[in-house]
Amino acid sequence: MSSSIFSKYPLRKQNFDFKNFIFIISLTLLMACRTKFPAESENKMEPAPIFPAYASGISIPANIAPLNFVLPDSVPEAFVEISSSSCKQTFHIRHSMRFPQKTWKRLLQKAIQGTPDSLVIHIAARGKRTGFYRYMPLVWQIRPEKIDPYLTYRLVQPIDGAYQNLRLHERCLENFKVKILLSNSLMDNNCFNCHTYHNGDAGKMTVHLRKPSEGTLFFNGKQSSKIMVPNTLPKEIPDSLQMPLNLVYPAWHPKGKYIAFSTNILGTGGYAAHRRFINLLDSASNIVLYDTDSNQLFLDPCLWTHNYEETWPAWSPDGKWLYFCRTEKVKADTVIRYPDWSERVRHIGFDLCRIAFDAETGKFADTVQILLPSEPEKSYSVPRIHPEGRKILLCQALFNSVPYQAKGDLLLFDTADFTVKKVNRAETLNSEEAESWHEWSSNGHWLVFSSKRMDGHYAFPYIAYFDGENFSKPFLLPQEDGAYYQTVLRSFNLPTFTRNASPVRPHKAAQTRNQAARPLTIKYR
Image (cartoon, rainbow, N blue to C red; front, side, top):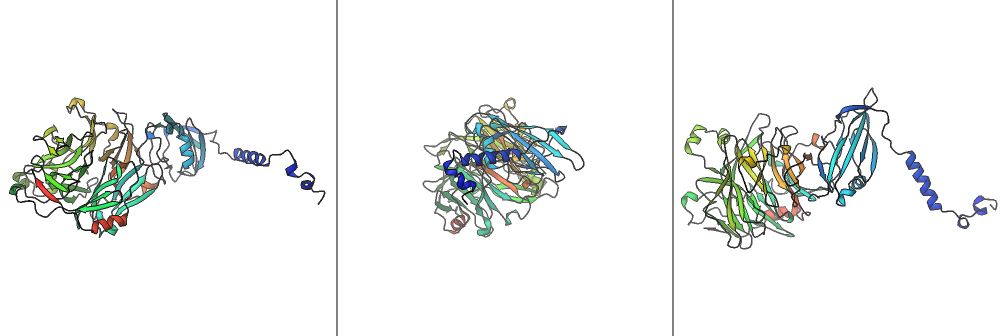
C-alpha cells in the first residue's frame, strides 16, 4: 500500500481544493446537459395553442403563482423558453408546462423589487410528421403592484341541486395551496352564501346560512357566533311593512361598527337552453342596518319600504354613502300578464341608487338619489366602489338583479358624474357571455371577476390590472395543472380578495352553525 497514489500524495498535503473541483465538474456536466431551444424551426405567424389562452399583453402581479399551461395532446414534444431581465431558462416538455416555483420567482425578481418588467415566452412544438414550429412570442407585463395574497370563493354547480356539495375555499395566489373553510357536508347540507370581509381582513367574516338553518355566522379571529332574526317584526312597524326578514347580502361599513344587509327572499328557476341554466328572482328585498356592538337591527323608512325592492348594498370607502340597487315592486297587472315568474323576471330592471349616511349617529338621510335609472334590457347590480372612491364598477344585464344570464357586462363609472358621456364600459373585461361577481384588491390595482366566457356554462375567475383609468386584458386564475379548467365541473362564485389567511376551519364553522344564536333586537326608525 506504500506505493498507493493516495498514500504517496495525501490530499491533505496537497495544494488542492477538492470542493472547488467537484463544483467545476458538476457545472460542466450541467452545462453539457442544458436544454437548448431548437435552432432550426419554421416560424408560424400565430400564437401557440396553449390552454389557458394567456395572451400577449396581459399584466400579471409580481407575486402571482406561475401561469402554467398545456399544449394539445397531439404535440409529441415542445420547447418553452422564458426570459425576463432577471434570467432566462428553457424547458423541454411534452405538452404540459409547469414552471418551477424557484425559477418563476427568479424571473419575477426585478418586479418583486419594485421595477416593472416583462416575461417573453417562445414556444416551439414538433408536429407528428414534421419538424419544429416556432410560434409568435408571448409577452406578459409584470407589474410591481402586488395582488392581495388570498382569494376566497364558493365552488358550486350551476344546476338544480347545486347545494348538495358546497364548499368555501381559500386559495393562496402566491402559490397553489388551497384549503377548505366551510363545507356543507358537515352542516346537514346547509346552503350558505355571500362570504364577506371587513376591509379585506380574513379574520372578520360573515356568512349567510340558507335553509334548513337560516341565520348569519360571524367570525372574528378565534371567536365565532351566530345571529338569527325573529320570525315576527315589532308591532310598531306598519302592517304594509310586515314581511319576512333574512340577512343575505352584507356590506361592512369601513369602520367596522355597522353592516348593511339586504333581506332577499329568492326564488330559483332553471332554463333548458344553453347559457340559461339558472335564474333567481327577489320576491321581497329591503336593506337593514346591523350594529355589531349593540347587536341591534335598524329598519330605516327609506330602505325598508313597501313600494320598492332594495338590494346589493355597498359602502363608499369614506363610509358616507351607501350604494344599492332598487326597483319598484311588481305591480298586480304585471303578475296577471306574466303568471309564470321565470317570464316575469325578464321585465324587471333595477336602478343604481345611493343614500347619505352619518356614521356618528348611525342614521341615513331622508332621500334616495337615483344615479343610473334602469332601461329596457339594462338592469344594474353588484356595485363595487374602488378603494380610492373615484370609480364604481357594476354589472349591467338584460334584466333582474342577479347577474347569471348571458350578455351581463361590467361597466366602470366615475362617481362624480354618472352621465352617459362619462361611461367607460370596461370593454376589455367583457365577452359574449356573463361577467359578474367582481371585487377590487385592497390597493385598487387588481380586479377579480367571474366569467362564463370559456363555454357559457361555468363561471371561472379572471384577474385584470387597473391603472386608475383602464383595465388590461384579463387572465384566468392560474392553477398548478394547466389542464384544470378542462375537467372541473364547478363554478367559482363570488371570488373575494383577502390580505391574510383565514382562521376559519370547517368543523369550527359547523359548531358555530349548531350553537344558540345571540339575542337580537329590531328597531324601526
